[in-house]
Length: 149
Image (cartoon, rainbow, N blue to C red):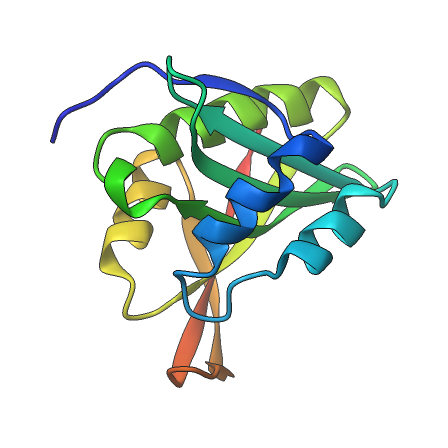
């Protein structure tokens, strides 16, 4: 796995189209309109990882309420997968969320997404529960995970 350095920062309105293009390639991905709506919400925290050339490599969408951050989505551009973009993005996001009062991060991940589950374990998440038949397109169970910050 080749690892590159990515610049991680909060998402801006001009990032909507490239982020929506990344989301279009994942199951149950977010539309540009949905990302735009989330970007305008007070509880939402959206981040991107950018290449040296300025391309968006990955995005992460969180909601922060009462010291708890929920990871709603994290996606990587197909050409940037397995290069460290998601790991660097999530690590940077966790630091920013902690600075904003988050004490714990929660997420749900498809049970069949072994790569994501391995990344989350590497980042310190533990499995805390299961939601049967949670996902559609394709059908799958959700593994609940959490990590203290």
